[in-house]
Image (cartoon, rainbow, N blue to C red; front, side, top):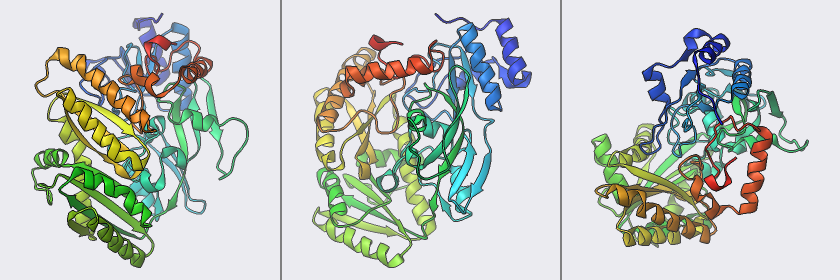
Length: 469
């Protein structure tokens, strides 16, 4: 149903965005063919770097007229293939949408374009005592627009929630080329259906986000980090709910099993404290009262004793805290460097984490598969990295997928779902019916058709082939 990009269409793309911002050279094509998802590669036919919503509008109207698929690219840090141009066509790179337009410290709001790097945005706000708590592991390179598309969470979701909790309004271009501003700069808004919340988390299938109005918080004055080592994975993961029952509300509570820590040590070339332990928890506390944080530290230490903690390390100096976070943030890349991999993004109610982890280990052991687990224990989100190692291609492409289905069914049986923050995208779409009913999928498909009747924007994502648009 789709057309190829011929020379005439390429010239039209140049007339819209400018000749220097349209390319089809091998370097540009190769860069946009990949992200951080496994070893997948799908080259687009042309890469366009627009600068305004009006240019994107014209590009999408042209794509509808010529029946050419369009894919939007942010920082290229996706983990479900959500932005990969699986059917070729046009890749729209948002890298030129990189301006922070306004910081309103009186109303605790900021306006930024979607191509701003998350860490750059956060650090600019912190200079004015403001706080945007969403904290994906790739914050040094991911774009704000991509955070909205996937409704990113990260470690601090345990206390502060996810991206959708901090977006008041946004500007986006519909697949048919209409420029829409939805939401408002008020803290309350019940005015018709929330297109805002529909677009957030839609994985780039319902529109191209160009501008965002964020709700901000006051930057906490104090932070402390605890690193707890356990000689039993069960003790470690079982302690998580106990901290909350004791009245502690950590900013982040991260689970790391020994294999993940060892991989990070090798990646960074430095030794991690207590790396011999079977599992560890990294807990960040923040707030405006140092006395309250110190009391929380004592509470955590006391609770940990009930779970046979081996060691408790307290970091209060900025350098030491940054060192511990650097190790945590390196784990994903470190584990993935071992071999080809499949990363699953399971999430359950927090108290079900011990059952989830136990089930994952039983399933992977049954199938002879190596899996390394780590993630955001504070909100029940466990990342499961399945490594190919020496498995044959046949086993990797067949039996491993059956094991993943078992893991997902187990996750759903515990009241969980198959993606907490990475999205469904391309790699998980055939698993969607495990977590979502047929009636829901059909309703989602109808919404997609309403927004995008020609299925131009990011086709081949989210919906299983059985439910193809």
